[in-house]
Image (cartoon, rainbow, N blue to C red; front, side, top):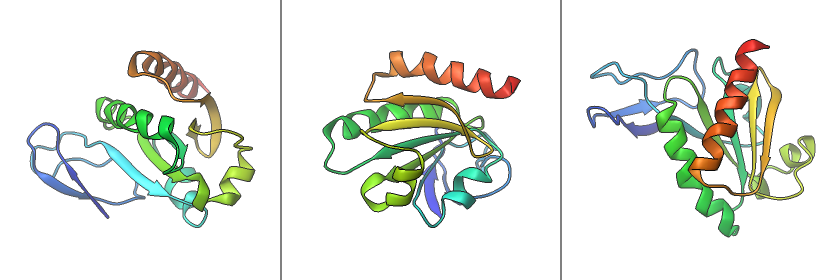
Length: 144
């Protein structure tokens, strides 16, 4: 469980890493940003079984661009609360996932729906650059 502060009413809510649907504030019932960590052992449960599209951030603590893009991704996850789940994966601690997705540089961003990759972005980018990429990825998967 992770504690998330509601952007609407500031109430703190416990949000599980995996659940059906999307998390809502227990106080005001507005959608909450869903930002969780995952790795090799829980990827299937947290990402592949998610009922929402999942934005996967493959990063590492030593990576400067990864640290710069992280707040941008959290901002986008907050803007898309109820429509998107952000899952952060430390590539150093998830070698199986790095191999599975053929990760050659970080940060690498993937948008997945039902475990299938629908979009990939390699390298850090600003919110104005990532927003249209994410919108396009979300539109792709709602039509597929």
